[in-house]
Length: 267
Ligand SMILES: [Zn+2]
Image (cartoon, rainbow, N blue to C red):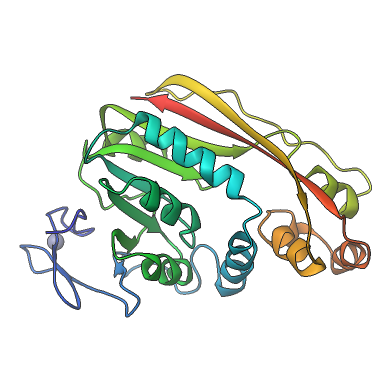
């Protein structure tokens, strides 16, 4: 058995050496790296989620450890709300840097990781055999209803109805979002009139807000390559002209603020 469901008929999947199959004989391939491809066949052609270049920028940046304070805090928050043998889902896991941290700090828990980007899942799946990984959309989670103790999302698209479906009653949703001052110096270096992030109110219809943990700090940037990788991780990069990007790289900020909110909700 796997933790995953057949995305076609919703029956449980049995994991095989090279893939997975349901009792209705719908079968799915396992990539060489180890994730199961549960994306529907009828997805329009082209890239889904982060492409190779975006995944590489993210990977290179995260591996330098700039966001370690966030990962450590996220792990302690999840640890605080988890119980023995809890099943934890990273919904929109990207290249799995946070997932690996959570897997390491919660040794006795089941860890599931999903992302729509196959390029990202390729890295996630290789990180740790303990992480059960699949390429899938957070809008159609191939996961049984009320089977997850803690679902978390780090800057990923949110699908409240799906999260509500899969999280157990009394289970938790942990949501990491950028706070007001996040990357302020980076934005100042790019834009003539930068704006602060607008932070949404902590409301989710089917969940009760429990607590907010803030993680703030200043990163001493080691190279302009790191600044570019960080910039590429943001939604601003793709809206910025080549000229403005050049401006950033000609005099990259030496220090950049990070500022996050970790929000905890209970179903
Ligand atoms: Zn099936």
